[in-house]
Amino acid sequence: MEKDRIPLQPFSLEGKVAVISGGASGIGLGTAKKLAEYGAIVAILDISEQNGNVAAREIQQGGGKAHYFRCDVRSAQDCKKAIEDVVNALGRIDILFNNAGVAVRKNAVDLEPDEWDLALDVSLKGQYLLTKY
Image (spheres, rainbow, N blue to C red):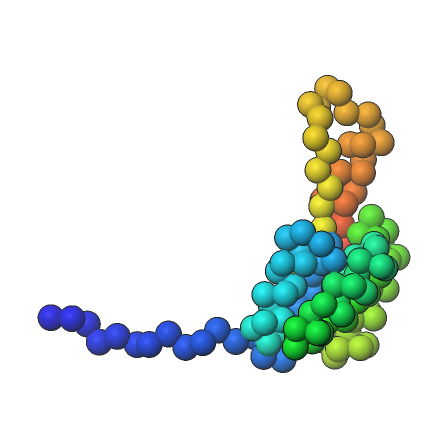
């Protein structure tokens, strides 16, 4: 005997505010597009103003809702300001996707200290700062 089946409801994020760090390219941009497709209002945080604005326009032209906010996730001041700006502009934050990251493609013994610092500051410290604020 077959169990009663409950049909899957279409997935919706209608009206939810989704913040995506590193949202102007790569995995971040792909995620921003998909979240917008499901109805989320996307807040793209990225260090690149040019790429961030292009990404937001691309999502808008596809029928989604997207805004760009400049943020260098290595900076506590930038992270705090970006989160405050998102809340001021969009009212709240429902989803935070800490995506910004830097991969240095070298063996650990070949890394320079400044390369190590950059990778940790973007990929780890930035996650902490955005979540904190």
